[in-house]
Amino acid sequence: MVVQTLLSAALMEYPSRRVVLLIDDPPNPADADAQGQLTAMRALPADVGNMFAHLRQRFSLALDSYRQRRAHGLVDLNRERRRVAAMYRQAARWFERLADSFEVRDHADRLFVERVLREPARAHRARARTQFR
Image (tube, rainbow, N blue to C red; front, side):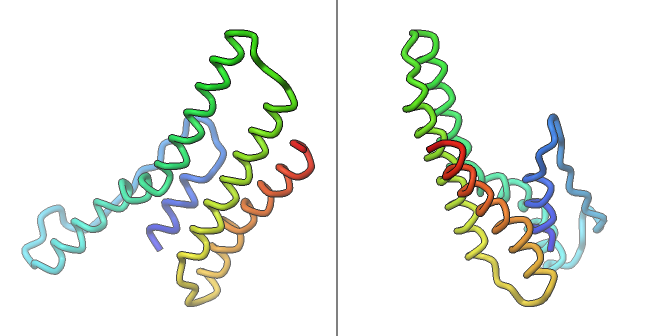
């Protein structure tokens, strides 16, 4: 549930947002199991961030490359449209792989996978097809 919540927050399209995980467990539990659970919970934000790392790096490199082409007057709009369409398809595949990795046990899991992961995948594919041919 916490991973789904963090992913949902991270995927919101709001500028300058900051996602904070509040863990209301005791900060120094005496029980070894509770300490292990707390350690795992504290690692979740970084784990979720790592889910984005590869795609974020690819898109950052693509943006840097575009800026270099633009600075040198080498922008071909048809090629740029194809590049952007390819990036939308990459994002769609990322969402689909992530959706496939979630175990769906109940209606809440189904809702998360469908609304937070599969809907954006379909939207990215449609945008790549219709706007960036």
